Amino acid sequence: MNKSELIDKVSCDRGVTKAQAKAAVECVFDNIAEALSRKESVRLVGFGTFGIRERAARTARNPRTGENISLPKTNVPFFKPGKELKEKVNS
Image (tube, rainbow, N blue to C red; front, side):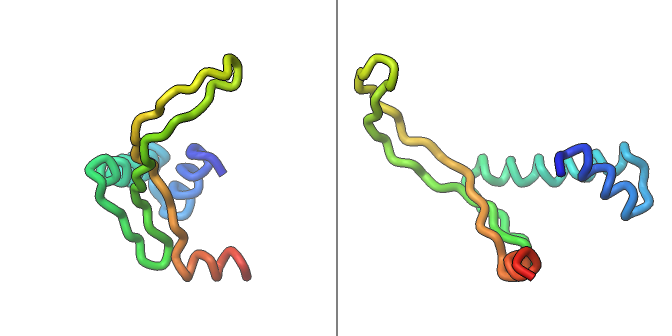
């Protein structure tokens, strides 16, 4: 399922227009992204947790030239599924 299919499903399930469903879905995504940009986690009970992990600075190698390059530390988003989501997927 992609984003437009999700919007169609929300529109159908909730009996709202596609424009209203699109606004709601985008609002949820924007708020999750905004919280993650502030390094806050987003816990959706029964669904899962979105969070940020810090990846340490490291040295890597350019595969084309073999040259060593240094990569700065970065923040990487992650998702940890909740118990209910795991059970639903595995049933």
